[in-house]
Image 1: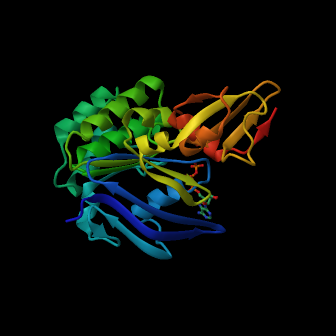
Image 2 (image 1 turned 90 degrees about the vertical axis):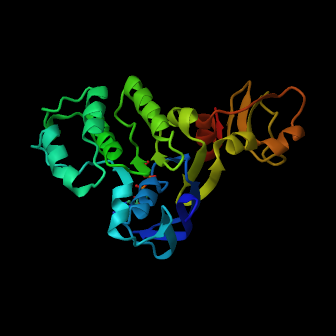
Length: 284
Ligand SMILES: Nc1ncnc2c1ncn2[C@@H]1O[C@H](COP(=O)(O)OP(=O)(O)OP(=O)(O)O)[C@@H](O)[C@H]1O
């Protein structure tokens, strides 16, 4: 039995002219955030994990089973994708009637509780739901069939701050069982700050970092100096921004000692890391 909920080894996926190359490991019992700018390859990674795209090379292991996996694996994965594939005319009670027979472990009370918690009326029709409500419905379904792994593609997009908070809280509850794991792509890194202990950062189809969130935050420092205090010829820096009076950049922690004494050095937020690593030098 593997101790990993997910393991992608030397995976390469081609989509038109875009090529994704990804290696990552998500240990069981953890929540991993998948971040990166638009077009970085997050959805491609998720679709590959779900067996919707076939890699040209490499291996994908989900809950210890190598893809293509036996049908029984599907029940153990809860999925939230950008577009739900539910019939628009269905009421939310009919959604349950349609899906429950496919899952041995379907939890009727759990589904009813989650609808209530998310403020979704069981008599509402799928087609009437806003984008945020449709996301909540998908999360309720994913959590109602006894999944051990949740794979969520931007589940917080379209949700207001209260609902986002509610969702991250529910993911935290899901993780109370140490055999449960979550992979969660998002542009809203503040959501991850609260819950994700692992991060994979994709950029232009490549993994820039995959590992513990704390390790990523320890690896860099956000540095502010006078306008000439950061010289890219001397020090490795990312997303350097200069104005007539200041310079700001993300600098590897190991290089901070190369800065002059006037520098203000801070531990960066996840958001600051993502923004600076993905952006080019800006001179104002
Ligand atoms: N069906 C397709 N055919 C060809 N190229 C595709 C297809 N779908 C996606 N791509 C390309 O693959 C690349 C990665 O897209 P992907 O959707 O995985 O990125 P993403 O990180 O999820 O982006 P976003 O944050 O914008 O959702 C993009 O360059 C996109 O144009």
